[in-house]
Amino acid sequence: MLATECARCLQYRDSYLLFNKNRSLFKIIANVKEKEELVNRDILPYSYRSRQIAIVTARSMFRQFGSRVIKDGRRVRDDYWEAKAIKQGFTEQDPAGEKRPGAAKAREAAQQDQLHARQLSAYGDVVYSNGPGFGSMAHPALPP
Image (cartoon, rainbow, N blue to C red; front, side, top):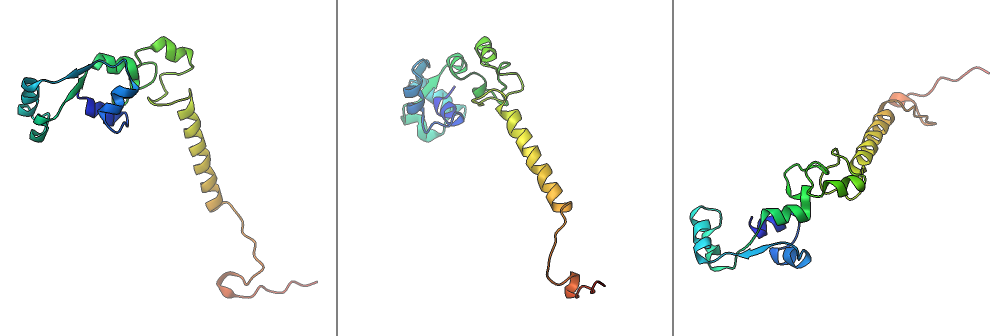
């Protein structure tokens, strides 16, 4: 896997920071032949053939980041360390990248409550006013 793409996926600024913060990743530097092959396959742009290209093994990325490096990954199901994720309280319904178990459910419930409250306030509230009535007509006087 190209380290620059992995770094971008995990929201690191560049691959240098990715490797600096995660020392357990297995880093491979591409030699000239490998870079030429990547350029010929249109994986790398032509201008990158003179740069140093870092490659990281997919296994080390998966061990370190688990479900976060899988497209539409889910905790527990797509994690390398499943038992650890279960022990922390995560379920298969938790999307990748969640810091706390059940945070996604709580966020969705809060959004539903907020949406429900907006719908009620838009249609169900009675507004009282001391000003002139609808269409600027005066209210009829009430008999005593």
